[in-house]
Image 1: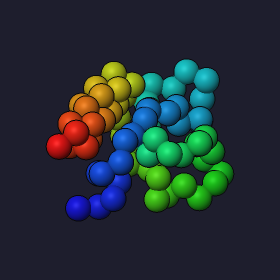
Image 2: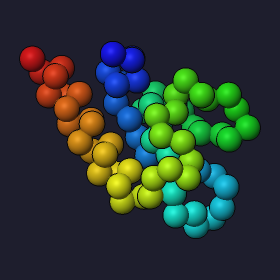
Image 3: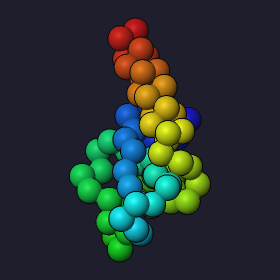
Amino acid sequence: MKSIFKQEWKVVECGTQDKCWCRMIVLKTLKKYDPDDDNEDSIVVEMGMIDSYIAKYVVKLHNAEIKRQNKN
């Protein structure tokens, strides 16, 4: 399995507009998302692919599973 699925994620704004509908999912270890930087290895879901509500829900489920696996 890819290592991105074994790490915690977080939701970030895409950075294209002040009030954009979409969100990105990136690795929690990424300090700050900058669209001009080469962060390709840290991006789980790219901009324009998922809305804020669903992104937060997916990240919550994923991170809970990671924590559950680490307890065992």
